[in-house]
Amino acid sequence: MAFLIEKPTQIEAEGNKIIEEYIGRVNSGTAEVSIAKMISPGGWKEPAQTPDFDEYTVVLRGKLLVKTNAKEFIVKGGQAFIARRGEKVQYSSPDADGAEYLAVCLPAFGPDSVHRD
Image (cartoon, rainbow, N blue to C red; front, side):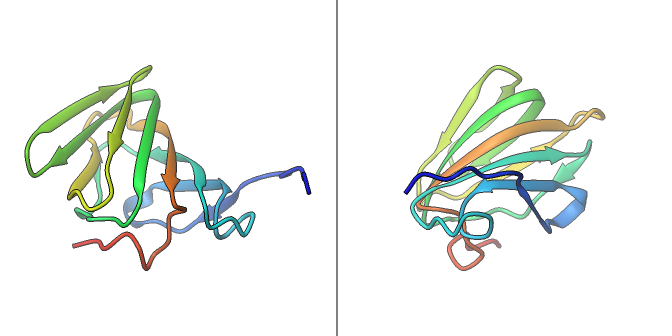
């Protein structure tokens, strides 16, 4: 059955990052996919992770520095990045203005499936 999602649920995150989950395990009870808006402050950096999900990131504003074992990527507003499940990845927002981005995870993000360092 179709249904409207009135608003996101804010999920606690490390380092003053704001996570607004629209679709996922917490806000809609959806295990197949999660869609969240992230707002990360300038200088924010999260621990590296090796998740059990693919993560599709679309940067709306600012830029992200994404580190993998093989390479570092700068992902700017209007660009996207794909991290595959099982690949070690670390996200940060190095600029003073921080970043705003959408994260889509398949299957849905969960604290038991992210495997942070």
